[in-house]
Amino acid sequence: MPVKIRLQRHGKKGKPFYWIVAADARSKRDGRYLEKLGTYNPNTNPATIDLDVDGAVKWLEFGAQPSDTAKQLLSYKGALMKKHLKGGVNKGAFTEEEAEAKFQAWLSQKEQAIADKTSALASAKAKKAAEAHAAEKASNEARAKAQSDAAAAALVAEEAVAAEEAVVVEEAVAVEETVAVEEAVAEEAVNEASSEETETKEEE
Image 1 (cartoon, rainbow, N blue to C red):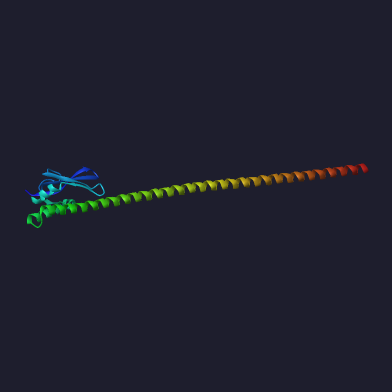
Image 2 (cartoon, rainbow, N blue to C red; image 1 turned 120 degrees about the vertical axis):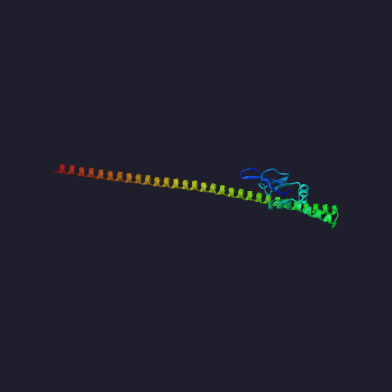
């Protein structure tokens, strides 16, 4: 029976979640499987991979063929490395203890690389959040300044209108005073003319 190590899709629409399974190559993708070897969640950054390395190595030694994606996941988690080291032990190239030490050293290096990537992503996220906060603060300050400038401009405009109204009122008062003076002068002239006529009549 040909066996494949492949992904079996689970999860909801738009957020897939995969099981890593050993299944009969003739069965449907999401059908029956022989053994569940782990899970793969691509929705996180970095992706979350949980794998039974020893179980995967057992199936690889039995001749199971991984799919392209499954092969990448097995390589990422060290299953292919461990199978390679086991082959070296079987050939007598090194002892099982040396093979385990090599695998642990490789695994430690891999975990450090993952930790560095996670830290870099966290730093980038924090930097992006700080930049967004600074941009929002600058925008709020600019908006507040614009509102302050608009209020100051409105106040200046109101003072200008008030000053113009005061000038108009002063001019109106001056015109009224001028008219009053002219009327008084005219009235005085009329009175003088009337007085002169009266005196002329009396002399006649």
